[in-house]
Length: 65
Length: 258
Figure 1 (cartoon, rainbow over the protein chains, first blue to last red):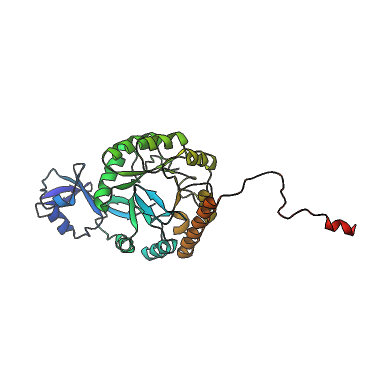
Figure 2: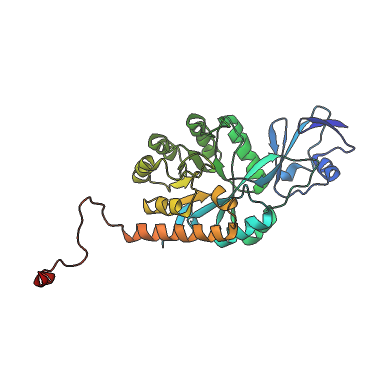
């Protein structure tokens, strides 16, 4: 499936948000996800299905003042 | 030295710190450890999908330091509310340092957007710590809408210019019924000590510690300065006057020599 991930087209094989994270192989600590401008709580990552219209943004915590 | 309470949370240290600009995660941890800071700020950004980011979360959590996400990068109230909601999810905290600065050159906080965002975030259950100008009227308004503290600036972020806003900070401190935390511009431990001496409840320091040649030693220097400033404030500073007032009794026994 082709989705928009952080403003760029992204191809992956899977259905849910959790599948996308597994595919990205990134630490899940300190991250947050929004789909179509709505924050998706971690408890819903497994049950949230993606489709070709999904605009996914993943944010991570970094150093800052 | 008394503890500081914000939203029911007790802080033994009145030195809050930022995590930006350190040369490495190790240098940051050494500096923060020496500073004995109990609250540190973090930012959010879009995840870098190509590179692995240096994980600073783990050592901070192991140390038991409270995390305070900021809304840096937000230019409007709407963006700041969204950033706060993301941060709450990412760091599992309802505390947020609300900062909205649309101007990248001076990073001046937008007071109107900040007030709008603060009101909305408080309705959503956040503990809001707003970064604002040293504007006594705005600080009062933020207090009235339910902010648990206010964070007026000393001078522009990262400028190391110290308490350029001192006369206005003094008004804010006098009027405020919530803790006043001087944020931004504190370039030297003496600036931090001064802020505490004039009655600020805490300071937030980042650049001055992070860019020091020896960040760990600078962390300790700030800790001592903040403690000294607070102790002096609690002890009661003497009044300033123009004329001299002798500390030794003015006796006339030397008159015998003439």
